[in-house]
Image (cartoon, rainbow, N blue to C red; front, side):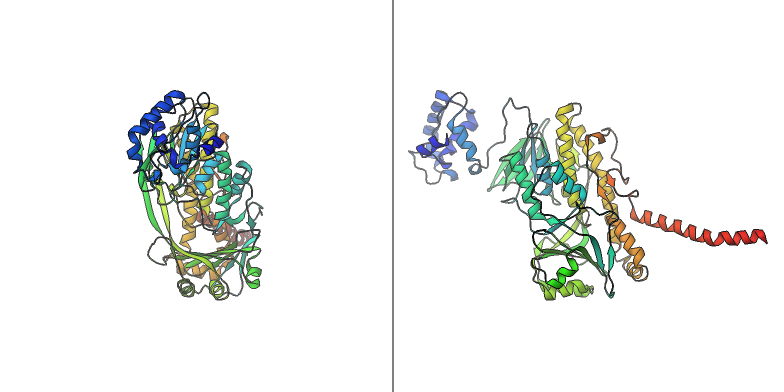
Length: 547
C-alpha cells in the first residue's frame, strides 16, 4: 500500500482534506468512499487553501482514496502513518474492541513505568507529554532494591546502567575523621543511575509494548468528567484538542493539573524549605575518585547536607547535590553560577564542596526549590494521580522517585488483574491501589521529616552538639532514617475496598518495624538506660538485703 502511495506521489499534506472526510463520515471504502471524497473536494476546495497543513498544495492535487479489498483502504493506512501531521486526531477505538482506553498525562519515569506495565491486550495506552520530546537531565538518581527488581525482573527492562556503593561516608565540618555507615546487609540491587539513561530504557520498553503511544507537545489544561468516560483538553500547536478515555492517569509532577480535579479533600503544595543545587562532574580528578569511587559521600554542616555519588558503571561521572535548609525564597528551576554555589558552601563551611569547586570541572549546574505535596484522595472513579502528582516530600535519597515507580507498577498490576476476575469495578480497583500505596508515603513522609529536623533552625544547634559529642549515636540515627525499602505488590495483597488506607503503619515497608525512627531510637536508649541502672542497683539492693 505504501508503494502505491509512493507511485501516486501522495504525501502527508495531501491527506488533510481526506482526513476531514473520514472524521465526518467514518472509514468508508469502495465507491461510496470515492463519491463522498469527490463531493467533499469539490465543496471544500477553497477552504483547503487556508489549512496550514496544505500550504503549497495546488487545487488540482486532491487527496485520493483507493479501495484495496474489504475494509482496507490506502487512505486509512496513510492517515495513520501521518498522525504527527494531524495533532487534532480524535482518539477512538473500534466498536468491537473490548479494551479500555488509558491516557497517561506526563511522560516522566512514573508515567512510562505505568505504560510499560499495562497489558496491551487489555488496554489501549496513550502517553501525553507537554514537552516536545521525552527527556530528562543526566542527573543521578538513587535506586533502591525494590525499584531495580521492578524494572529489571517484573518489567523486563534491559540496558540499565547501574552503579553500586559499598557504604555511606559522612564528611563533617571541623572534623579530620570521617564516619562510615555500612548497611547491615549489602545488596547488589542498591545503587545509582542517570535519570536520562533510566528514562530512555523505560521508553524503549514502552514503545515495544505499545507502538505509537507517545504524543509530545500536548499540555493538559483541563479535565471534564462524564458518566462513563473522562476527557482531557490539551494545548497543542496553538490549538485546543480534547481526548476521551476510560481512565485518566495524572503523572504530571508537582505542578499537576490532574490533581486539581482528583484531590477534592486536600490539595496542598507548600515550600519544602530546601534550596537545591545539582551538578555533574564528568571527569573527576584521581584524588576525588579515590574518595568517592567505592562510597556514597554525604557532607554535613550546620544547615546543609550534600550527597555525592557515581551514576554509571561505564564512566566515572559524579553527581553532586547541595541542599541548604532555608537557603532562600522558593523559585522555579533555573541555571546557577559557580560563585553562587561557592558562597553557599563557604557560608556553611562545607570544605568537601569548596575544594571540589576549586579543583574540578562541573557541568549542568541548576538551582531549584523543593516542595511538599499532600493530596487526598488520589483517585476518582475515572481518574487517578501517581508519583509526585500525588505525593512529594523531600528530599530523602530519591525515596519519592522510587515510590513513584512503585506507584506505577502497583497500579498496573492491579489494573491488569481486572480482566482475570471482573469482580471489582474500576473505582474499587483504584481504591484498592490507594489503600496499598498511601501507607508507604506516610512512612516516607515521617522519616523525611526526621531527616529535615536535623537541619531545621529549631534543632540545628542541638544537632551540631550531638554530632560533636555523640558521633556514634548520631550516625546510627542518621543511618536508621534510610534503612528501609518498599515491598513489591502482588495480587495476594488485595484488601477490602471498603477499608480505609492504613496510615503510619509498616504495611508495604520492609527492613524496619517502627514507622518513626525517633521512636525506635528513643525506645532503644530507654531500654539501655533501664539495663544500665538495673545493673548498678541490683548489687546495691542485694547488699542492703544481706546487711
